[in-house]
Image: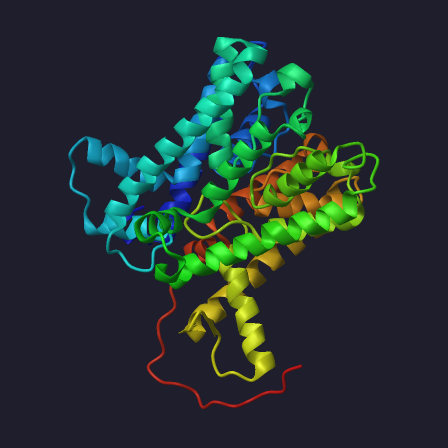
Length: 446
């Protein structure tokens, strides 16, 4: 296949698939497992896909099953998946002094969700520098917290691993070797250093590098571009609203918030409102939460993070565009808009298309899993939405998935990471534009 004939979406899809395949081969080697035995390829493929797609769903506990070599492979896959393989490839090209051509800039534009090709190389440099600074500072804070508990070597490694995993919204953790399998950070539910550091990493990673750059350069909200304003406002509303609702719903639940102090309750509710933004960590057991809370988390996971970030989901701006479009229809306005700016109609239509494709994907996968898996409907749709949103939260179904279920979740994680519309563009055949237009005719709606 001639690379020159491939479109940017097709190259991105194949690039992610190639990284996943390489990671799967490395993780299936005996050196990658703690017991020195080869890992079944399907388990290695599932883990590699989850790492590259920065999801966090795992069929084996990361801290127990994988050796130090295996954990390094997983961490590398998380970093490549979070930044995007094109960003990493550009880093090596810049280090080697190679010129970044127009085709590479077009690929970066697609990978970073930029409106135009202008400034993509500069943004790539900013992405790499920002990532290094944020992960470095967070790793130091977490290491200082864990060195007294685990010792110098393990404390530093835990700090680095969870800083990278947190900023890239991956949700992988190593605490299984300390507290038992699949415990995540439940033992630090009331620890402000751990929960606040990881939650800040999740939020920063989920904002998008373009937003972070805009905030650093402009500093004042009034000077931000509309995209940045929408991302910040939508993110704040979802986190604050989610915290309040989860606090109320779980306040008297003896299995979650009820035994905690007021500070612990607020921290836990806040953290569980942040982590569905595609992070995958949990400080309380998801399966013990009320049905209403679990459904709210499903909605938050479906929305996800923001464009150009390390997270998945339909994205905050997609959700905001749809809401603004609906509000425009209700109020009789000709065009959606906010902050004294109008949104192009084609962008609102694109947002609705993304949401519909995502809803269709989640619906189909949930229906099939309802046949192949022996679990209740809420658990299955929770798992599917978590995979699509590249979140990594689970109600306990992941380790018990059948072979068919694992393959379906692998495909769903992949679709969620590359984006439903990008995947659709990569698969779809190019249609010739018609030389004429048919006459317009209205139909009845609603």
